[in-house]
Image 1: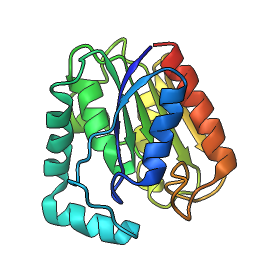
Image 2: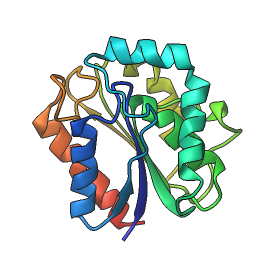
Image 3: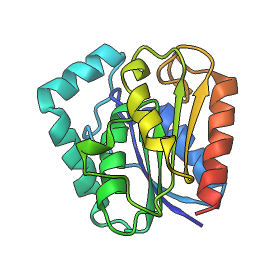
Image 4: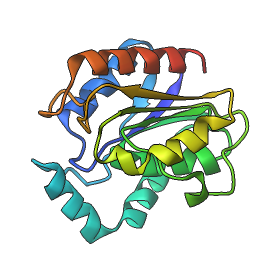
Length: 189
């Protein structure tokens, strides 16, 4: 059905990110999960963020862009938190993008261009009290404010990586709803 490029968060390509990818595969989609950390995973968000700070956010973003080069251009780009950086950049700048799912984060559109491209639908999903998403909420609201093909879904609670079932922050009810919405979004592409 839909080609999907799914980028992991700062703890790496965890079993929970892989499980989410498998849910999308079970719905009939082809899902690519590039490993931006060369096999490294981290036991805490702080450890992963320390690694990212040493490597650089720009380098992590470019690793994602390079990983997508051999993949179909007509993909939907999905990012978990840190993975939103390459997902959003590709959705905004790679011709042929079919959509974006930004999970747990959103950066201002101005980070990668002057405007969100026409005919590239987007959904942003986060917990309303997520302390990491608080700094992203204005960018998310701005992104969806004047677009008919953009949606912002805020879930009750304050867990950051609530859709990763391998982490203590996992919220099964919210994750189930997010997954259902993501599958519906992909099915319409």
